[in-house]
Image (cartoon, rainbow, N blue to C red; front, side, top):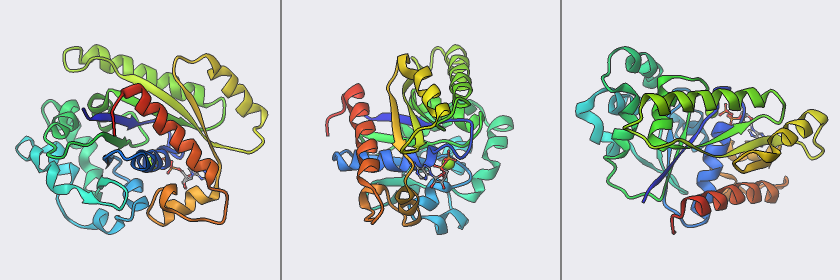
Length: 265
Ligand SMILES: Nc1ncnc2c1ncn2[C@@H]1O[C@H](COP(=O)(O)OP(=O)(O)O)[C@@H](O)[C@H]1O
Ligand SMILES: [Mg+2]
C-alpha cells in the first residue's frame, strides 16, 4: 500500500524542501518507488530537481487537477520522470490555487487526496513538499497524507512551530472525522545542526528529548545546497565537501519511516 508523507512547517526557510527531496532520494536508495509532489506554489522543489523550465511554462499542473473536479484523473499526465524518482512539479499557475480553493471549489480540502487516489502507478511512497503557511494547500497535503514530518530550525523558536502544527492537526481531525483517521507526526527533523551545537540548539533538543516521535538531526552542509543546485538529492551528488553524514542522516530518516509504515521494497 502506498504511504503518503507531508513535509510541513508554516515557517519558510527551515528545510522543508531540502528534506522532501533528500528523503525521497533516500527512499529511492532503499529501492522504493517514490513520487515527489511539489505542492508549494513557489516551486523550490521543482527547481531543486531540475524542472525549473516546466514551472514557467503554461501547461496543465496540480492547479487544474485540484481546482476542476472533471480533471482529477489528469494527475497521471503531469508526472515527470527524474533519475531518482517521479515528480509532480509545481507551476507558476499555482499562485492562484490557495484563493481558488478557498472560494470556488467544493470539498476543497480533499482535492489532493481525491487526485492521489486516481494515480495509475502504485508508488511505495509519496512525499509532499508543502508551502510555508497554514493554507488550504497545507490542509490538502495533511489530509491526503495523514502522516507528517516537521523540519525545524535548531532553535527554541521551533517549539512554537510544532505547537502550531499540532493545532492544525487537531483542527483537521475534528473537522473531517469521517474522511480521515488520524494525522500522525512521524518525526521532527532538526535541520542545519552545526558541528558544535550552541546552547539554544541544546535546549531545544533537550525539550524534545521525551517527544512521542523520533527527533532526527541533519547537519549543516554546503554539499546539501550544492546538490539542490545540481537538481538531485545528496545521493546522486558527488562533492568534495563532507556528504557522508548528510546521506547517513537522510537514510536513517527513511529507514525509520519504512520501519514505522511497513512498506516492503
Ligand atoms: N542541512 C542543510 N545544510 C545546508 N543548507 C541547507 C540545509 N537545509 C537547508 N539548507 C538551505 O537552506 C535554504 C532553505 O531551505 P529549504 O529546504 O528551501 O527550506 P523551506 O522549504 O522550509 O523554505 C536553502 O537554500 C537550502 O539549500
Ligand atoms: Mg520549501
